[in-house]
Length: 273
Ligand SMILES: NC(=O)C1=CN([C@@H]2O[C@H](COP(=O)(O)OP(=O)(O)OC[C@H]3O[C@@H](n4cnc5c(N)ncnc54)[C@H](OP(=O)(O)O)[C@@H]3O)[C@@H](O)[C@H]2O)C=CC1
Ligand SMILES: O=C(O)[C@@H]1CCC=N1
Image (cartoon, rainbow, N blue to C red):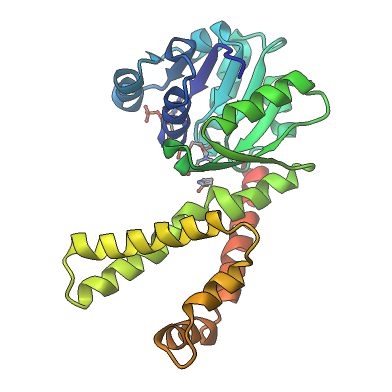
């Protein structure tokens, strides 16, 4: 892949996950800078991965070919207004990983016709298992689209969406989704502990069941998920009774409601930030 000089503005969970995945996949650490007000996160990244660490957002953005905006949506306007005063963004590629901040808003903050790609990643990027959705407005060149796709492919799988609304759908289905699975696993671990397992054994039972199920899905691309479920569900057996509790309590409706709530919040954020 192309190795351009890249600066992350914001050094938190998501920037850290991407940086880790990039360096592990061979992106040269000396081409990566990370900026944040405190040393807490950025210095840990510098120490662990050999990237440059700074508190000077504008300095880092000026030097970079690619600027990754990775602060919280609430912070985005203040951060961008300061950058806009100091940095000429023409000729640079801007990548935003923020939920709920639109291309139109970035153009308002950083300049019309901004060369920007919106990316919606997730934290499994940390271990090379990320899932990112990407959206680029019409002004973005094919070379910049290719670079953005290659960058995120270094930390997982990608899909492009044709409309910006698709980014909110990626949030619901992948960006926020690791937390859904963690919540499910937490509940299973807690019940396993109530059954008498130690915390470690309960975690191992749940972790291995989850990663095993996920590996089976990956190894069976032509098998519908419903078939994999049925393969576990013996007639008159235990799984049937367990699944009946989920369906009686309307798990599909709960999942649909949760995903719709994520989308609604992203739409609200687009008006707020
Ligand atoms: N977490 C996730 O799973 C996902 C997050 N995202 C998006 O990623 C973005 C970041 O989220 P996340 O990593 O979780 O957030 P974090 O709270 O973990 O990190 C935010 C980072 O921004 C830094 N920061 C705060 N103010 C400034 C500033 N003025 N200039 C530069 N840096 C600043 C913080 O600095 P300091 O280190 O000093 O505290 C911190 O490093 C959000 O927009 C979110 O929507 C997208 C997909 C998934
Ligand atoms: O919760 C959030 O708003 C961010 C976006 C997707 C995952 N975390």
